[in-house]
Length: 455
Ligand SMILES: *Cc1c(COP(=O)(O)O)cnc(C)c1O
Image (tube, rainbow, N blue to C red; front, side):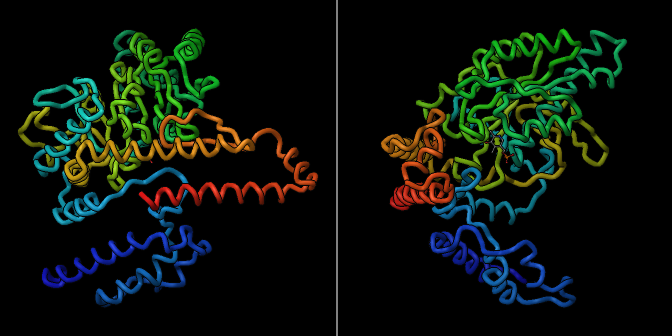
């Protein structure tokens, strides 16, 4: 394919994508395919001779789309929201076009510098304390990770190294392996599974801290667990607080937990993967109070801020905690600039060496929506969830089972299913109850969809 054909095909592809998104509601959200559906549809081996673009293009509708789950359909209600927008898609095209691998400042200065600056912008939008920003010569700064799971893993590994070094300086008789064996990380029993996974990968113990009746971890509970573990000879080193938990969007009490972590030399990481986007609205910013005690903070613009996957924004107060833990300087990667607020080698901040120019899509989105446009986007979602909450509350058969704070509404049937069976005159026949529940759910979902479509 030469540039002339690329121009033509590129325009066709843009049209195809625009058509796809414009008419996405006509497609069935979850495909009717069985596992292994695709293999019989394509040859066993890659083609020996080149094929033309038209043949490849035809196979999108024939082979790919029949097996796609349409995350951006207004009828998609699974997992978590996935953000996307036209400015972000355009920026991703440009990212592919530039095609740099920006592992260090020198590997592509714009790739590094835009990321640093745009994460300062985003940090200011959520009013992060100055220490988390890179500025011109700051000790902190932001980085785009692929996912919240990576951000948690990076912070856990950095905390591990930092703690091992500290304990070794205090008790030189302990070997690294002995210290590792005593390290223990903590997170709420409502925390995302990626936190436990980070501990598994990091080879350290992890314990659940019980949440209260509001699904929140408070200071006294953490304190109690820490006292017990310290008395048993363990070394608490990492606490992952969650703002906006996956099951019910509850918020750990940072203002109580932060000072405890600081006093105990425990790295506090904050996972706000979903909820973080809401902090750009002043009325929700109070949910982030206490971030000043954290060592690292993360949220996913790819969940709720109109930037398509992958874009997980992470900030640290001390970049040296990351770079100090993971720095390797083989000859072929060295250059003569010193790491500072202006010069960053992001390879030290992440697990892979290579990285894409992901800040472009964040930059495009922030500029083309503006803070106001993004705030409107968040507010609209929160309003919708309160509308839905209101509908549920009006129906005496249902109850809300966790406080509705942002865009997530948890609700359930009241009492025992059995009662409904009785009321129906169909004692013990579960499927009628289930059918009824499904019908009620469908009507709610339709209502909600109507709202979304009208937007
Ligand atoms: C979605 C979510 C995650 C996982 O996010 P990835 O970016 O897919 O790793 C982690 N924590 C919370 C609280 C989440 O809501």
